[in-house]
Length: 124
Ligand SMILES: [Cu+2]
Image (cartoon, rainbow, N blue to C red; front, side):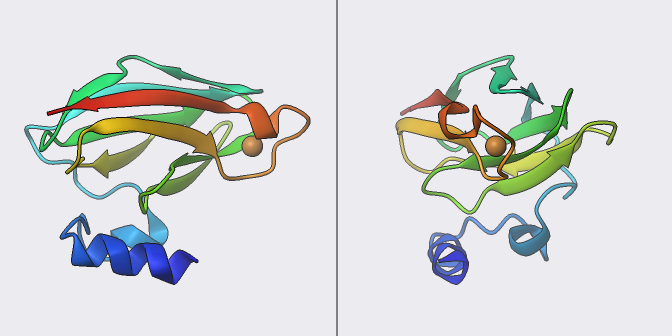
């Protein structure tokens, strides 16, 4: 599954930089990226901003205030594990299609894991 996503991302020209797809995070964010603070806790995402524009790079500054969680965007190669106590991780994403995207947790984190989701919107 993972390789499939990587293939899709590479084909779409989305690969953000060397090694970014497999390790995620801490690629140097582009200077014009919109900075967005993301906090993962048990069991929710707290996000500064939820509406974005196609083609506008987003620098999600992801951190966990409790537990360990996986910041992932369904249908993309974005997937970054963050743990409490760790410095925020820059996760850069440049949406190329408008729509509603689901941010979900990719690391099992307890009873609320399955419902740890929120949505963001990308406008044309
Ligand atoms: Cu989880």
